[in-house]
Amino acid sequence: MSDQPMRAPWGDIAPRLTEITDTILFDDVWRRPGLSPRDRSLITVASLVALYRVNELPFHLGKALENGVTRDELVEAVTHLAFYSGWPTAATAIGILRQVFADATDDR
Image (tube, rainbow, N blue to C red; front, side, top):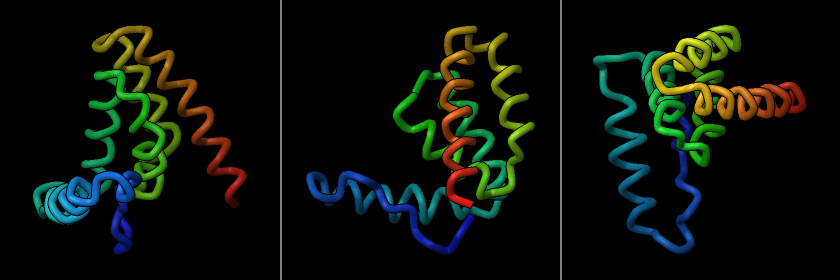
């Protein structure tokens, strides 16, 4: 994970929620020594897919790529989740993955 803080996108309307998100979630929780950022990303992506959290998924898929999770691993994780969280959650996640991959390619 980069040393740049992940800034919550709602700072203009909810500054305290932004502060808590930045200092507790992204600084404390994400930097705990028990798991690598890569592992935390894979767990987070799996949770977001399973819970159908499509708003947060694109950001965390991009962060997973930055943290060393490969494209193939992300696709395999979503394929695996289809059998545990349901076909609709996996199908939706694959569509989001396609866009994240395209955006990552465009950024090069």
